Length: 225
Image 1 (cartoon, rainbow, N blue to C red):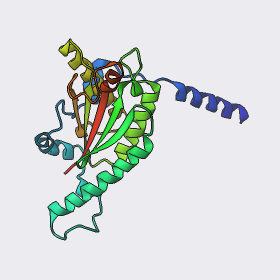
Image 2 (cartoon, rainbow, N blue to C red; image 1 turned 180 degrees about the vertical axis):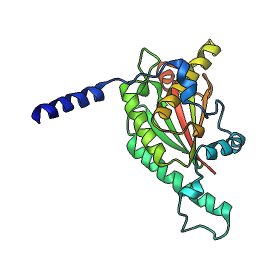
Image 3 (cartoon, helix red, strand yellow; image 1 turned 120 degrees about the horizontal axis):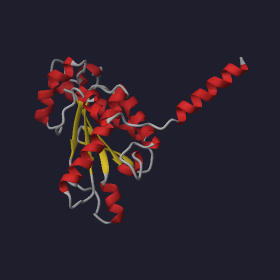
């Protein structure tokens, strides 16, 4: 018995130490079947809703038992109350779970945005998710599975680059790589919008320190209505 337990413990330890590796790029579209390769605009969410519901998605009003503050018979008011409650709980859960350098959780209206500086989730010298990044994204995936009445926009960004095509390709790689990881961890791709924005929308100066911050992945989470 002791020997069997020892072998099991060793096997478990080796599995835990195995570094995550993204699947072959030619298979990414298979993992992301149902995802939209576009920005998560209001119009895009409306257009995506039938696909999302057809893939087993649910609306935020169905996910929350609306009580205090809900107007009886007023579906719009009820949905608004549900969304506020739901997203506030999601924001707190993410904030509490992601207290790490290079990661922040912010509120944008009803939406919640998780900002992941590239170096916090990817290898420094390779376009691959790091072990620490895999741990962080696994945590995010667990929370997104619980708060599943949401759409998710995954956007990649670079710092300022002279090669705009290269910046677009690099940012798209980061976004898709993150989306594939989440899909592998049971996040429904029908919830996803994936986009690479290159050097657009910098959040810091384009100096040496600011560049590191501008290289990032943003996961924007919106209530599904």
